[in-house]
Length: 115
Image (cartoon, rainbow, N blue to C red):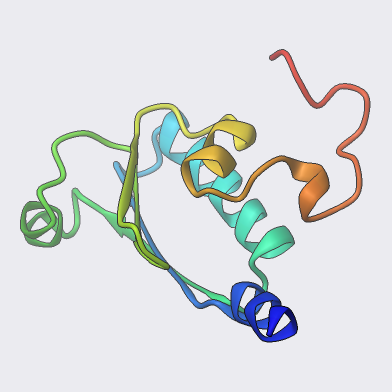
């Protein structure tokens, strides 16, 4: 039974939407951080949609987005919203319930903390 539970946990599909404001520095950092986490830790299991609120304001309004960047995790439950500075990969991981880096990949190196 634990083998099935483990397989289910690692095979979960993720649905993320990142709301940004054009090519602003904070938006660019958020895109880089979220894409890196998706590529390194959720590869093959994530659908990432990036929405520029300047180009698609109705989508942002429909999702009650009041600040950017905002990352919305719809799945797996529970739904989560991370708002503000998304350049800190550890903060984004924690917000997504991914746990520490070592849980999913090798050490990030000696300078992985304290920016």
